[in-house]
Image: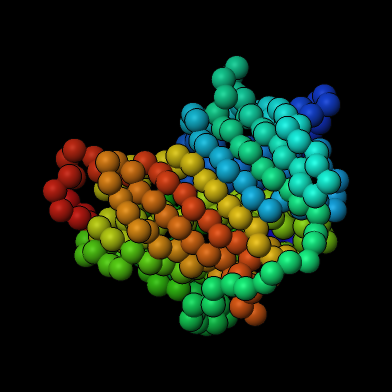
Length: 297
């Protein structure tokens, strides 16, 4: 296990300070605010700590309410909404400096047999044939070295491999609003379904809005032609998976309008099982001095 993954797992091991109240810390992010995937994963762990281990999450719905302060602890309060025979529902509010910064609702289910069908896995190259995220990032001479180092540090716990150039790697010309990445943790994990789901939740916020930028030839905050932030996030966990084994994150954007962009995605295991569906909307704004055209100005 890499040191970065050990550090991330330590962040997800929340401190319980009272019944149904937990406290978490933050780690370095690409931008000077709490990474949305981190707070979502921590909130899900807080909810899961109040649910029997044989009921993993099957869905979550969340809103990012305020910018998180990476220098301050986050307190997670869990509300036990329902404990049914098959389903358990929890609501979590994350608070910093006396104000809510994030809200999550999650539903958990005991395993049961049922109907079974799925969308097929899209074609994608073998992850072993693709450069690592670090190698790809260091291969873009137009990126500021400081930006590259922040990306590398923030993603060190995850082996994330782009199938094609990310928005900031080749920008200025609109492309199809579709992107793919393979990912897995940089090390093996314990056999805890909640942990694997929390880590997939963490990674799911890294690249989902890339397809919005691709459609307009924008490079994103890394090159300064777009500013943005996550607004809401929803995930459905369909089938068991391991976050320490390769997962294909197939992402697309059906719409951008009114300063917002929508991303939707499916996550498949390497052997083709549909594991997760993800939908996220985010703020996507073009600075006034870069409103005309796409790419560098």
